[in-house]
Image 1 (cartoon, one colour):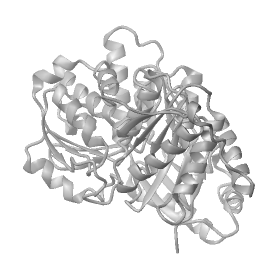
Image 2 (tube, rainbow, N blue to C red):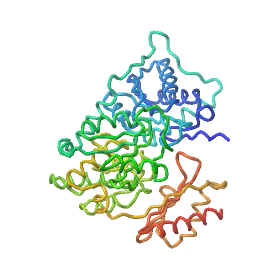
Image 3 (tube, helix red, strand yellow):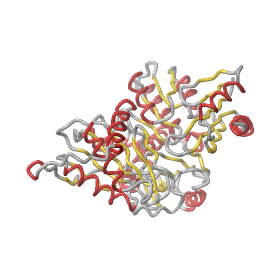
Image 4 (cartoon, rainbow, N blue to C red):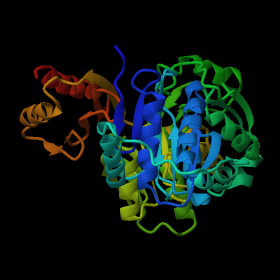
Length: 462
């Protein structure tokens, strides 16, 4: 059975040749071109998987045919596309990527003219245009005559602006003086391109696994502990002081310490938040700093904000929701616990390259190993599970959990989050897969698993 096409307010994802076809991709891109500001061009990039250039060719041709110029970034990371949209004054951007999904999947992620994933209100309007065209048997694109055709322009150096912006956030000379030996696992995807340049600029001696950016993944692409077992020993064998592991579109970063221990994704954003607050404090600019994470992220960042006299707020899950709250609260920094730090000075996009540079800066400034930095942060056990969606729909789950946890503190902003004195559990439908997710965090793994078990039992009774 083919995997269904999943369409959200920020993009779509499906299986190539079945749920996601060229026709579907073109229609979605044209719907966005109808909504986006007229006159300015679109930036188009892809994460390196085999189907990416095929889709890029098709949607670029379609946009040119309706009079829109396209700026071709080629194989590029998702945060790089965001930076390009902003620096080139584009009307928007389309990144062709299925993120952490296997190679048979692909998708389209939409960027607004501000260089961020489009907010929900704008995404809903694009989706409305797309669905109206899909339901109209007489719909056809608004093709223009030959005098008004758009052009496809190749960007000469699609990584330069992003590289420069990332380097501007750290003390380059301090990092360079350490001559760190590092390992980068780009898994034959887009992160290898800018990753190599960034590490070279920071004077790092780098071992790179999967540096071809051709989409032939060396392991299952989501950078989880299970999927990175083959990478752990490479860190030790190469003599690296740290291992950096990216997902295919390089907006997520997992860490491996110098001992070959999987540190994971949750620590990435927490360490980057601490680095930024520490820098602000040392420079005398630490005036009640605001951070933002999503409601499925570890409370480590909340503890760190309090440690520096600030506050960390929680948004619903989803990059666009985190960015909305960051902008609203003028947050100094933010991110998601899936390894996606967001530094407003580079762009309002999850960014593994920002993570690489700033984790190295934290190590260099404090003269610490990654394991020492991790040990200085109060950690928690976090357990994440995927379960099937009940046939009756998720609202029945909400009602059942509300009843089962009647005396506990609950939040319904994104699924059901239940908070206790020293722990929490969240149940929510996925935005990208036909599943529900259960996430729990507690002082110990046994406690976190017990919370997940309790929620799962309630869901199974529905």
